Image 1 (cartoon, helix red, strand yellow):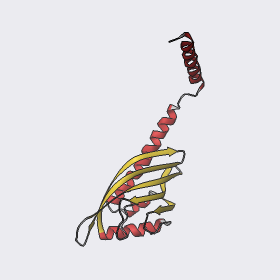
Image 2 (spheres, rainbow, N blue to C red):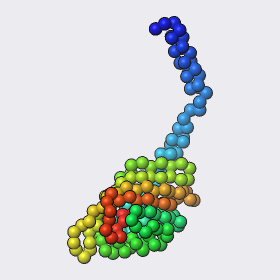
Image 3 (cartoon, helix red, strand yellow):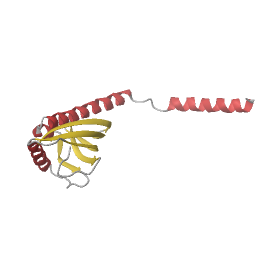
Image 4 (cartoon, rainbow, N blue to C red):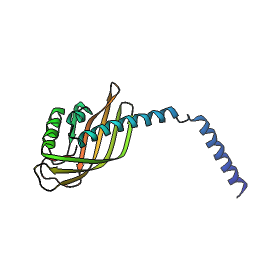
Length: 169
C-alpha cells in the first residue's frame, strides 16, 4: 500500500474515531424501558389469549380500548367494543375454540405500540360436526392510557376466504 493510501486510511479512521466520541452513547435505560414495555404488552396479549381459549369474554374485553376498531377483509368492520363482545359471545355459544398465536414482532414507542404475528384457531361445533381450522396474520395497534395497554385497532388477514362469520380476533 502506498504512503498516500495509508495516510488516507489513517485520516478516515481518525475521523471515525472522533465522530464516535461525539455521538451520544446508546441509552441503556431506554433499552431496558423498551424491554419492560414490550413485556407488559405481551402480558396483555397473554390475557387476551387466555380469555379466548377459556371463552371468557369479560377477560378479553378488558384488553380493548373503548374506541377500539377492527378490520377483516370480506367482513363488516367493527367500531364498537360492545358489538365485538356480542360477536364473541355468539361465537363461543356455538363453538369450542382454541387459538395459538405467535408474535412475529412487537415494538413500543412512548404510549403507542404495535405487534404483528400469525395465528391458528380451531372451532369445534358444540352441536357436533367437524372441527374447522383457520389461519391468518394480524396487526394490532396499542395505546397506553393511565399506565394500561389497550388494543386500539386490529387488522386481521385470514390466509383463505372464510365462509360464515368466524373470525379469530
